Image 1 (cartoon, rainbow, N blue to C red):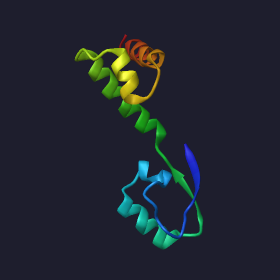
Image 2 (cartoon, one colour):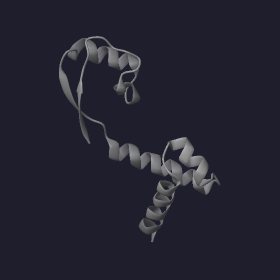
Image 3 (cartoon, rainbow, N blue to C red):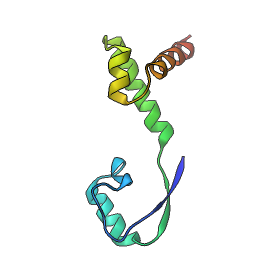
Length: 91
């Protein structure tokens, strides 16, 4: 997924990009590209795959669907889908 972001002249702790890069990296980005609009690949497929792997490992260790849903801020139904998709891939 590509995302267009306006890069401000000054870095702020609550900037949405701090979810993906460190605040120090954001300050450098603002210094060099402040005032411009950048297209940024957020690697959402990779991030989602890694999250799903962590969820599957936690399920194997006995963590409940409810606990995982709260931890990852997704529904229990989505947890069940992740588990079901994994079972289909393994078979």
